[in-house]
Image (cartoon, rainbow, N blue to C red; front, side):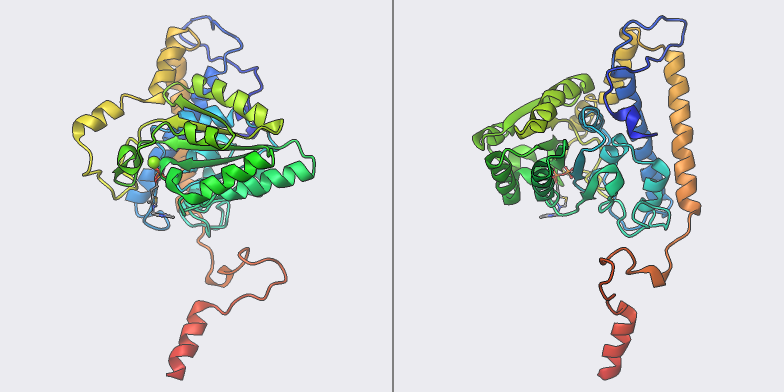
Length: 360
Ligand SMILES: Cc1ncc(C[n+]2csc(CCOP(=O)(O)OP(=O)(O)O)c2C)c(N)n1
Ligand SMILES: [Mg+2]
């Protein structure tokens, strides 16, 4: 899938099926639903990759329940825009046009991955798609968009840079330095906080008294808003004005509230929250909400949606098969693409270790 599909052209193709005539030929909802459905299916396969022992590293953070933030905001970004993500960024990259095969291969630590297996789930990047990098340090990706925004402004490029991060980053000082500079220099930058209510096992109201997150951005002179991440169209509409205004030099902030359906990472069974809470939280399902609306608005029928789900399932099955059978990087390629061209490569660890041990 190319970026063209996810960029909001305003002219989308509603899905027919079940003999129902599409009602609104200009609705973006079918495309938004498709993006969210692909994210959900991809994440389910990532979980499978882990269970099969095929993922590189033990930490995998799924964005199930957060699909509307990724789909809604990426839909209003343009091809030339750039972004960074936090450690829970698979869905955002998919919504920006990443190929599932190359993403899955990266998560499996294989040569065919976006970073030849050296980035993995939490450090994936691709300059061609404007992905300036996922980052495992909470808040770590935020300052990079200020630099990208400054560069775009100085070079008079029509490009917005968006930082995606979790509610945990709202307690990090780097966010405030970044928001301050973006506001002071009128940079084309947007800060997006995906508020899934938890930072690992800590609920947001155990981490801060100030839970109206956008108010902090307002205090810095940003165009700050909050939106409910249940309704992807609402997210898209709110994001559109914020991103458009940022393009004109008014930086923005958007907090999207949602619920982290599962544990922090694959090993976490969420012992710190009750079953009742999880059942209630998972009712806030943006994929189901969009599906129900497609049907009630007669934008799609059950049959067409079933066919679409099947197609997406196949696409993601193919991605996991591809990743599992792909080649692992060779030991000799350990430092390739890690240092700038012309820089001397460091001594491989094993050689260094052997040398140190031989000295003692
Ligand atoms: C600076 C820093 N402190 C602590 C950690 C450990 N850590 C990893 S993820 C995480 C929680 C992040 O929560 P949030 O930002 O809300 O993102 P979410 O996992 O909910 O998507 C923490 C504390 C870290 N990676 N970086
Ligand atoms: Mg969180």
